[in-house]
Structure formats: structure tokens, C-alpha cells
Image 1 (spheres, rainbow, N blue to C red):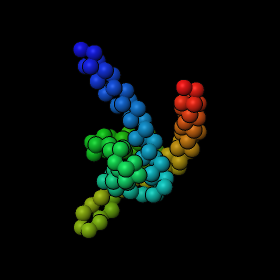
Image 2: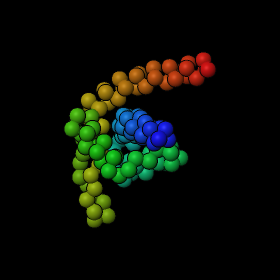
Image 3: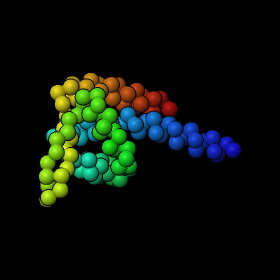
Image 4: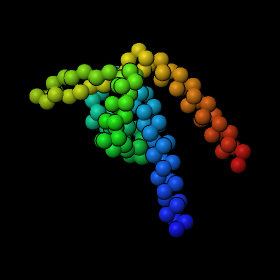
Length: 119
């Protein structure tokens, strides 16, 4: 019973943590790479994290849809190799929001480091 509760708690907290983190990572990646299609975004996240950060395709497209809805990314269609692909890029608002998020992530990282040092 305790194991079930632990697994439930871990599952929920991991989902909550990853949800915001994946959005931030997608914004960072689009800033760095300028324009990518969904599969390339997922592939780059896997490469950059040595396979430790692997959003499902469904989760990634939900994130991209949400980022587009909030005006942080825009999409354009292009035909590549005879196949249409949707490419995503940051909007001006996306760049501004990312800049603010960087400061918040910095404060979180500093706090985590202090907490680890204080063990």
C-alpha cells in the first residue's frame, strides 16, 4: 500500500515538474535553433539530455499547441522531400517571456544549490 502511494506521488510530481520544464526547454531550443519541426525538437531534446529527457510525441505536440495558443511560438508549413512539415519558431512575445523565465530558473537553480550545500 505504501509503495502504491509512493508511486502515485512520484508520478504526479514528475508530471507536474516535467510539464513546465518541457515548455521551457522547447522555448530555449527554438531560441537556439530558430526554427524546427516537432520531430526535430524531440530528437534534439533527447540528444542534449543523453536520452534522459524524452517527452512523448503526444506530450510534445500538446506543449507546442499550448505555446502557440499563448502566442509564444508560431508555426509555418514547408514542404520537405515532398512531405509537408510544420515548423515552429519563437515570436517576439516568446523571446520576452523566455528572458523573464531565465531569471526565474536562475533563482530556482541558486536555491537548489544552496539547499544541496546545506545538507
